[in-house]
Image (cartoon, rainbow, N blue to C red; front, side, top):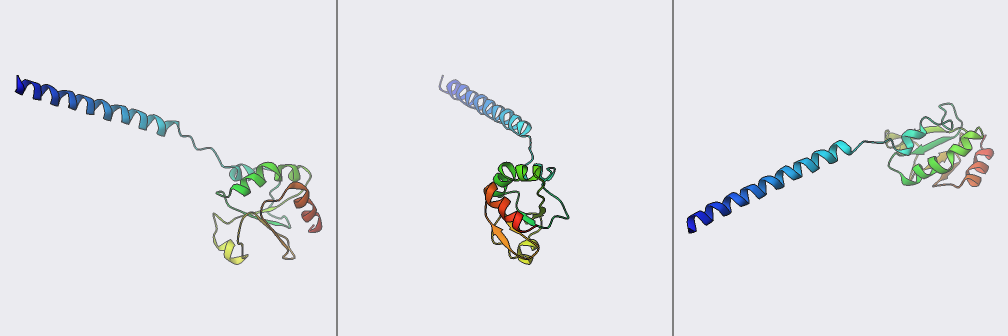
Length: 134
């Protein structure tokens, strides 16, 4: 009876471990299939009408910057609709830009004359600054 009890216990443990491994692999595979990568706001912004390679004001940003994403979602679309343009400068893709232009944080706006505006800006503030640097 003792030996039978040990064999049954081992079989039950093996079956439980098997179900656990099977269940984990199903959940793991389901999660990896369900994870679709949606573009960040910055990637979406690249298609918006406020970016132009020949704009007079450079806009330094990073795809990982929360404030850049907020700027691009809340402020820049309205300014773009009003005709304002910014030259996109992604410091995340090209870290040399940070050194070359002495970027200490994003978002940062730099005009042709060297004037700069750093940090998230509400629409009236950014619009006034852009008007001063046409």
